Length: 218
Image 1: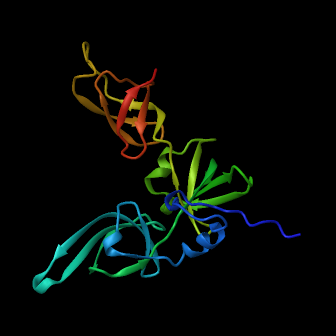
Image 2 (image 1 turned 90 degrees about the horizontal axis):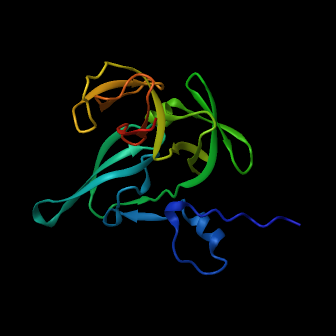
């Protein structure tokens, strides 16, 4: 007896559907078209054979009633940012991304290995695809991998991570959290601005999205 097909509902594709519609909906997501009038930040589309995420967009009216749409895009395969200008009303295939829980294992040069929490299979993502996210990976870290049609694209990190300060200039007596800031190098090699009272050996909390200081945790 053939097992029933597993219904995977991408996080960005949650919507009302009729009973039994799941498998049909999953197949449609690859060819569903989206118009420039339906663009939103965070939506992913296929364009010129590549996968892009909408970072921002602007509708610009032209003379004689025409209009164009200028889009700021992030290439989901390379991490590169760019811009595209298209005619208003143009349509593109919408790309529904899948999110699943994984565990970071290790890296070998520019190749990073992860384990699927459900299947225990190991897969790899390149440093180029990960971008700055690779700097915040920690052994055994639980996170989510972002994929499209079984192609692993990148990862979604926890909101913050705790890292040790390996070097920073000494502060001064009386320094407080409301004072100035100074650069500090962390154990992952990233440099962030920290309050003057932070010293070498301190562990601090950092936002993974912006690489900014949140608080000292020890």
